[in-house]
Length: 191
Image (cartoon, rainbow, N blue to C red; front, top):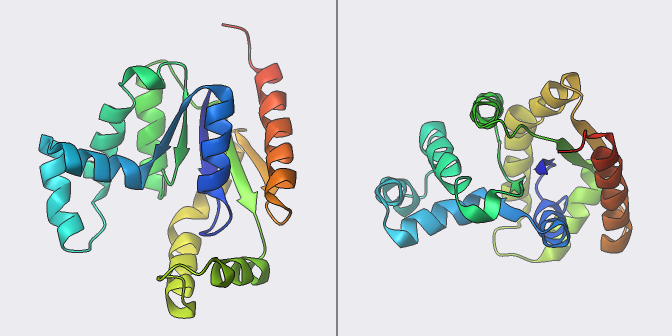
């Protein structure tokens, strides 16, 4: 299976997608980890990424897309993968679709973790990370609303989107995720 996780910062994408990837026996692809991995390996793309990371900037779409394209060719992605933190924009989503379609490995499912802003703010402030202050949280949420939220409509029109309430405990949310994945698996034609 190939799955995209969507949701605002703090909705639990990283935690839940990693757990689901382990259960399904597929790769968990975090964009941040892919960028840092290319940087550490000092690949050609990694050296390009270094300029952006060293200056505290986001890597441009083209660079991120190249890294994702390279990473998805590794053997652990053959049975499938979960995209965590990617795509971030409509351009990235359309590019990912073209890439996967060209490889005859299209997305099977897009999971949106839904949580209202008040609960999200409370969760992020309790998390206690150094960059989890009100100004940074609001900036990340605004960026999500402007850039990533439009993907909900995009994937909904394609019939891939399933929404999961992210307000409950980690176990409750995971149980809902499992249900959504099982439903998607049963709807997919056998290989």
